[in-house]
Image 1 (cartoon, protein in one colour):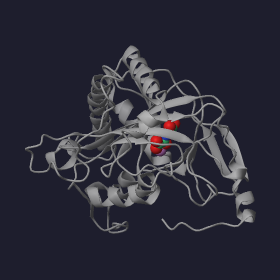
Image 2 (spheres, helix red, strand yellow; image 1 turned 45 degrees about the vertical axis):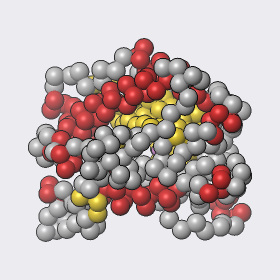
Image 3 (cartoon, helix red, strand yellow; image 1 turned 90 degrees about the horizontal axis):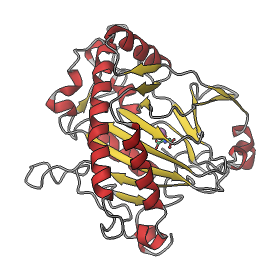
Length: 345
Ligand code: OGA
Ligand code: NI
């Protein structure tokens, strides 16, 4: 993405927008009617790639626990959080304004949110252990936050299982075998990243000033499973080229995941399934969310799916490995780490 400065007149154009509620399909993972689930999911993926997932097997009590632990971390003094500043492997703390998701519209600053990345770790003796997206994680001092790491590791494990189950329904919706994504070269060693997020209290977004909790973006990877508290803020825009842009509020549902498809799956499906623009507006209330980004294995070749091409509809993109694709997208949207080393936080 090219960062280009924009004139104030352009900024005014960006606020020409309409807000209304969204109506997303809801997939019940405990349902025995697989055909119904596939049909609801397929409809959602063809339309906008956003849907709710309920009865996914992770208890509400445990989700609440993860949110409480997230608050404990973000409530630490900044100096303590900077000790686990994100590293080159994208593990650890991302301070306020670190990320700039929508440079065209965020004229003055990045996102008004803090984050914490926890990724997958593969054993040290694994020949792939040194690949850029495989561990190790960084953790806050266990003396400062006892039990924190264990809760986050458990959340990571359990959400990965939900993501795998959703991927099976996606495979069916794409007319692929149910275990298409389960193959070792696909989701054998997924680059699954949990990201705790906090949108600060007192932060009120103002699209006319280019101030956002999270700027408009689409996610990079395969699928994202988002858990939120009950503070609203997430909005989706199904048609980024419409004037005015129509933003739809996505209401939180207690205990549910809001699942969305990422750009990699859009590309993989030859744009048949959609990855949709979304953003977060702060309303002044503190808001917590936990995003879980599920991407395939490092060297997985993302090449037009066999069911998504025909003579009339040839592949629109060349094959690319998952890691190459992700590296590019991360460096497009995160600040240069060296700025922190010179003390400008
Ligand atoms: C993201 C994202 C939404 C939210 O992290 O990619 O879109 O509600 N988060 O925090
Ligand atoms: Ni997102």
